Amino acid sequence: MSDVTTRVADATGNWVDTHAPSWSRPYLRLSRFDRPIGSWLLLMPCWWSAALAAGIAHDASQLWLVIALFFIGAFVMRGAGCTWNDITDRDLDAKVERTRSRPIPAGQVSVPQALAWLVLQALIGLAVLLQFNRFAIMTGIASLIIVAIYPFMKRITWWPQAVLGLAFSWGALMGFAVTLGRIDLTALVLYAGSIAWVIGYDTIYAHQDAEDDALIGVKSTARLFGAATHRALAVFYALAVVLIGVALALGGARWPAWLGLIAFAAHLVWQIRRLDIGDPALCKRVFHSNRDAGLLLFAGLLVDAVMRAN
Image 1 (tube, helix red, strand yellow):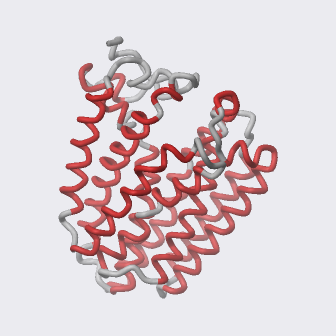
Image 2 (cartoon, rainbow, N blue to C red):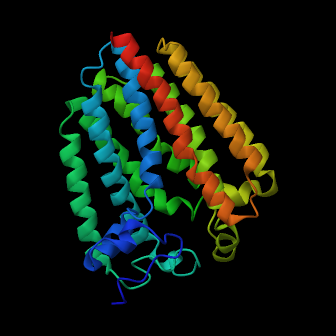
């Protein structure tokens, strides 16, 4: 067992490294609590759909509770997903400079310990899910199929980002399942828009590892698009904005939601203009900025929901 205080290469200067008890650090790193950006990105479609569904229902009385439960659920289930990903990818992670210091390849945690941590996180996620109606519970459980297969996709398809989109956008369905007890066309269009957004931002993320991925044979849209990445991002980000806009129209959204969408779109344009795929540090910063893009859209949807409920 290696020194548990040894930091992960691309996650330094965070609260886990500086404040968490030493024994807990490998487990918190498995869950990416030292890098919560992924949890935020998983959360955004959940919050979008919760707010849009509340607006459609003209009832925001439960919205704040749903927002809080989605927050907890997104963080623990993203942690469980990352733990599963690290278990399945441990041999690949050992070959990549950025990931070889992760807890399992670094020897800080054994596979059985990681599996036990995975189960604990999944149980917390289940406890959150059980607060919802039966339809929402079954909808949430269905997402586990995609989560389970995602880590293997980079080995067999150039489009693992699309599979990640299916998983990370699932919250776009959950808000409707929780609030309205159904998944309708509005929810499905919002889901499709979110998938396009995820493909875009995860392509940016994957450019950090493009060279190492080429050496070990891992596939990604970053490698697939290559020098055409900016054009591909323009297509997927435009598709995301259009589809989300269609969802807003179907859901009868008012002007605050549309302002949120405009701000979201402007941020995506900024990302494309700012991006340099040859600069991994910049790719990381642009990728991280998608939390802010998502929050801009959510702010508009939240104001819209409150206005329509009054």
